[in-house]
Amino acid sequence: MAHKKTDLPTKVCPVCQRPFAWRKKWERVWDEVRYCSERCKRQRPKAANPSASPDQKKP
Image (spheres, rainbow, N blue to C red):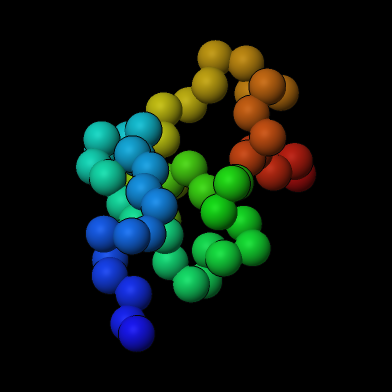
């Protein structure tokens, strides 16, 4: 029996405010997924305190 897309968990992207659904490639990291796309991830608002953001890479 095929799964319906409506049965998949969803989240709302904090950048574009659009809902997005679970994807197979996010299977192991779904709890950590915050953005619907790489584009939204790049466009996220910059934090006032850079050390508070876990996404930032240190040089």
